[in-house]
Length: 458
Image 1 (cartoon, helix red, strand yellow):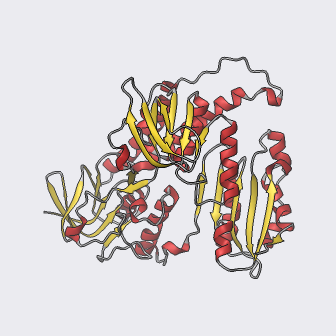
Image 2 (cartoon, one colour; image 1 turned 90 degrees about the vertical axis):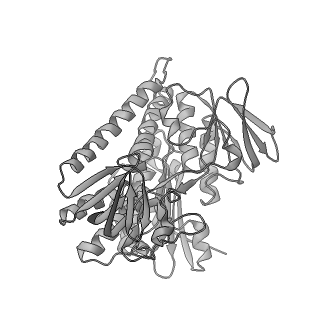
Image 3 (cartoon, helix red, strand yellow; image 1 turned 135 degrees about the vertical axis):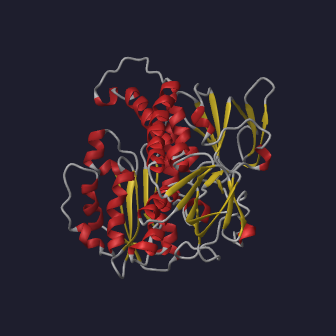
């Protein structure tokens, strides 16, 4: 049995930097990956989808030139094969860079294969059995497939990126991040798109005004929504394509299309790890239970990234790496609870969110002040011809600290960091209110919004 200082299972956004960090400290590392070197984000998540979003944006610009006085000849057409080639080249360059770094590092032994625990701090990969005092699990997650769709020809976030022809009619089951982003990009590519959501609103954990605004601008682009859909199931059509059964309050009971994308959530890749043999506990959904420093119930075994249920984003996975690395080597005490929830929805326009939603803030029982500004009142948004959306900030009326903010509109995915920085600093909103921000930008109206905070009435 080979003995290492550390074993890392999974090469995602936590596992890969951790491997190099451990190696830089002179630790002998076994680094295991069964499928995608670089993990979900690089191969089938953020990098490829945002490359597709950029291509879809080019289509939108070509179709909306007249609004800004630019006559663009008709005939814009998406070559999905070329879009895919660009995406594949970007991924390949990054993956090759990681592999080169691994191959040139004398402290890292790379295993390509599926890992499973064979006992207390022992792991079997291929025909090898290896052991270490420290083990780090970073196996990520995969698309969840409901039982009623398992016999249907479906796409998930990974397989849809392999298409070389644009779907005639793409049906999407699931009205959250993945479903909405793919829905808009393929609508812009030329597909008819229908999004089916079982709840009354899309992105159910968002405030209703945010969800409604996003649905409205997507409907304006021609995307059809079926909400309150229950008893969902699918079947393959004899002539090709699929039919999805929906039980809604109105509309046809079935929807037929050429392709089906399932975007109803993610499941952790923990079911093949044989965690029981190592005594590592999971919850009822299969997520590995961890403490504030990401250690499991077994000392020396850690879980990072999507598989621990503490965050479902690349930035939270990377922060998991930072927490572990700083606690082990940096002389710092960092915890999961130190971070503030933040995320972006990369529709166009995008949504940036930091901290609490308004509904969540109400439930705290704190006295609140709220600021609001429509993008149509922002000069820079009008100049760009992109006035959809709004900005909102929520402030604790007693401490003057920012509890949450959202920016739905042009640049929202970047602008939200302004609020996030103030929240991490624990500063009063008045610091940002009194700041001088550059003109002409969307951000420059944030101080104006903060000057007009209103007390929130019950």
